[in-house]
Amino acid sequence: MRTLVYTLDDAHQWAAFSGDYNPVHFDLSRGDGQLTIHGMRALLDVKSALSAQALDASLLKCTVRLRRPLHYGTPYQLTQDSRRAAAMNVTEPVDGQVCLSCQLTALANEEVVAPVSVSTLDADELARLEQAFSPLLSQAQQWQFLDALLFRHLIHDAALLRQEVIATSLPGGATLDAVFSQCQVVQTHQELVFDRRLLASWTPGTFTHPLEIGVLPALVVGDVQSGAVVRIAATICQENIRISNAITLKISQLAPN
Image (cartoon, rainbow, N blue to C red; front, side, top):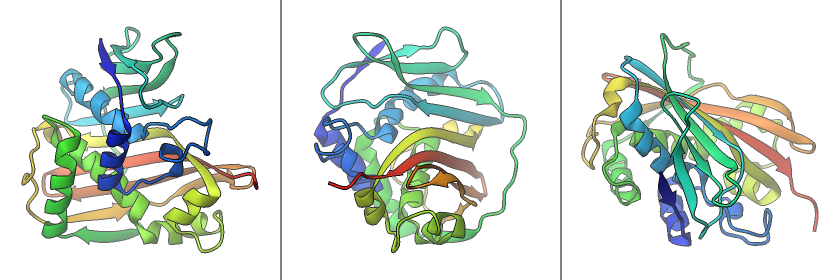
């Protein structure tokens, strides 16, 4: 068992790398009046602890469910899930309620989906991002860095917001900042699929060549007014790098003041 406690410094450090300045993490007037931890920031520690339990398979899947928000300054317990292999939970210290869960499983094969857009992250920008990620996690593995990198790409990629299924579901003139200011955005799930070789250790300078990132077709269920569920995904598949990252967001329009 391990205790996890986060501060606003952790929020700013993750936001500086990812660009995720969702007000629920910084503005006390949003959400339940308490600042919540970036789910992806907490998951860095969970995935790091879970990596040692990865099954002996060439292809691995990491499945995440974010059930309840985590708040800054509160000590949470990171524990092994006794009911499932290679699974861990983050629980409330008082009532033991599960806030988030994470499991690594073997995957026989992966459905290949053609990207709708592809962009290249050049070597200089990649080196800058590696340096920005380095303070976030000691003794990181390659899949953990690429996981964070793909998340960052998804919330910055303008082509994603132009996908028709996204563009017609969001407020006019949608940018990431506009979505955050006009809507409540909460991550509920994540699914990663990656090559076992990416369990290798990572340090800045591990990736020295440009990376091609493909954004996959988005899926939207519902609408923003009544509550939409949006699944967005991106992938890297080149040379010995094979990883895809799909995140599910619940988006609802904020009530007028």
